[in-house]
Structures are given as C-alpha cells and as structure tokens.
Length: 359
Ligand code: NAD
Ligand code: ZN
Image (tube, rainbow, N blue to C red; front, side, top):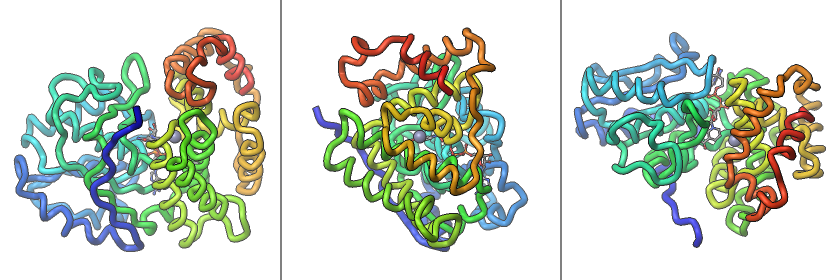
C-alpha cells in the first residue's frame, strides 16, 4: 500500500510574511468559542517579535519554555485542560517557535476535540476526532515540523508522535526574518536535522522518486547554507534554509528517517538531549550507514567551529545504555528504513548497544 496523506493546507512564504497573520486569522475568528490561542516560545517573551503577534482582547497567549525538556504529553494535557476550563475551545491554535512549540501547537489542536490524555494517542491514526484549526510559524529552520504529519511528544513510556491526517497545520507562515537571530549553535543543530532527514530519507528502503526529489533539492540548499562558498547565517541563507526544512519534511513524509533518528530518540528520552544536537552526536559515528555523507557532515561541523563531545559513552552506565537501546529498538519503522523489512533477523539489541557505545 502506498502512503496516502494530507499536506499543509496553506503556505505563505517570504520576508515580512508574519505581518499577514492577523488577516489570515480574522477569517477564522468566529469558530468554536471565538478566541485564538497563541502558544509562543518563552524565549520571545518581552522581545520585539512578541509585540508583533496580532493578539485581540479575547485571545489567550501562553508562553511556554522549551529549554528544560522536549514537549511532553503532560504539557499538552495541561494546555488543553487549562484553556478549556477557562474559556472553552479556541477558534484556532497558533504555534510560534521551533519544532518543540510547533509540535505542542499541533498536538494541542488535536487534544481539544479528543478525550483523555494525549498519551493515549501516541502512534499512527489513534486520534478519533478532527482537531481544530492550527497555524505553525517556525522561528528556527530544520525540523520540518512545519509540514510533517506528526506531532512528536514524550510520554511516560515513549517518545512518539501523534500522527494522523488532522495533524498537519492548516496554515504555515514562513518568514525568514524570524529566524535570523537564532544562536549559531542552535541554527547549526536544527539545520543539520534537515540535512540528516534528507540523507536518511534517500538511503533507505522506503525511498522513491518523490521523496528523493525533495531530498536532493533540500540537500543542495543545505550545502549552500552550511558548506559552500557564502555559507553561514545570512539573509539569503535563511531564505534557503526555510525552504530546505520544508522540502526535507516533505521528503520524510514520502519516505522515513533511519538509524540516526532511532539513536537520537533514545538519547533524548534518557538524557533529555535536544533533537538536533542528539542527531549530530549520533550521525557523527554512522559511517557504516551513511558513508560519505558523514564525511560531508564532519566538514560542516568543522567549518562552523561546532564542538561535538567525544567518548560520551564512557560516562554512561550499563542501565542507561540498555534504556536507550530499548527506546530505540521500538522504532521499528526507522530500523526498517535503515536495514530492511527483516531487520530483526539481521540486527539485535546488542548491535544497537554497540552503536551507542561508539558515541
Ligand atoms: P526547539 O524548538 O526545541 O528550540 C531549541 C532552543 O532554541 C530553545 O531554547 C528555544 O527557546 C530556542 N529558540 C527557538 N527559536 C529561537 C530563535 N529564533 N532565536 C533564539 N532562540 C530560539 O528546537 P528545534 O530544533 O526547532 O525543535 C526540536 C523539536 O522538534 C524536538 O522536540 C523534536 O522532537 C521536534 N521535531 C519534530 C519533528 C516533526 O516532524 N514534528 C521533526 C523533527 C523534530
Ligand atoms: Zn529530525
């Protein structure tokens, strides 16, 4: 069976596009209990971007910090329960932030119309009712969360997305002005998420012409941004990285991520490491899966003076390695992509542990 999925409904892209947000939302303001819920990365509280958010008197603005941990099911339930008990169901949810905030917005939009904890819905097509209108506005480029069909959250047992036809945003606003002040390290780690998405997408069993076309174009843009002459943070490269992120996300939708993401999810689950950073730690040692791309990645790391710690595994206990391995092993679709449908016959928990021990 071929995948059959929904895409984002509407996309506005370009410098200054954020100014169109009020007009876009005005068409939707009469829905449900007639107020908008803005979920904004706490980093922007008191910063110029916050003053530009088109908040009307009836709206709610929640500033959420994503510094301590990646989005959790408890956090999603809290957003839904607090808003619902104070004002009801919003006309729409607008997420303004990196992948973490966009995933919180996506997951919350689903939970306003579905009973119980979001933990119950971690997986494919478990959501029962369509969610509410939701808008994504990335402040970092790379995760592809702005276009993907999943809202990744960590529950008590697993890091796994709420994945269904109603997850993708109804509208995204891609404004390169908003990402221009991202700190250099974060710019690099989140940007590398796109690079790694594309390499994984085009080197596994689910690859196809559709996913590879997006991956190739996205990789070309990534090379302009991270390795070729003129690379680095600049206006034109911000424009390129936003498109690379979108295309990388679309490539994944048609294909899959692979071994690097399977390891990265384990690292994030056990040590709370940020997604882009955890990917970089893992990708750095995955030559046997991704060959020359790992060399290119290392050149990008060097070019931007990024320091990736070595010999991390020496400081880990056997229990921690086992726990990461168990989280990783459950990501069947990623290992299938990397190794093949029969991966469990070729690959054991011990092989995954060995990969972690290399880090
Ligand atoms: P993030 O959203 O976790 O943010 C990382 C840090 O950067 C935070 O401290 C944040 O406050 C800060 N930040 C955000 N924008 C900034 C800006 N413009 N200037 C300064 N600081 C800024 O980072 P991310 O890499 O975009 O997202 C990672 C998350 O995305 C993870 O939770 C991961 O699971 C998720 N993800 C989701 C998908 C998907 O398809 N849904 C895909 C990949 C990753
Ligand atoms: Zn990723």
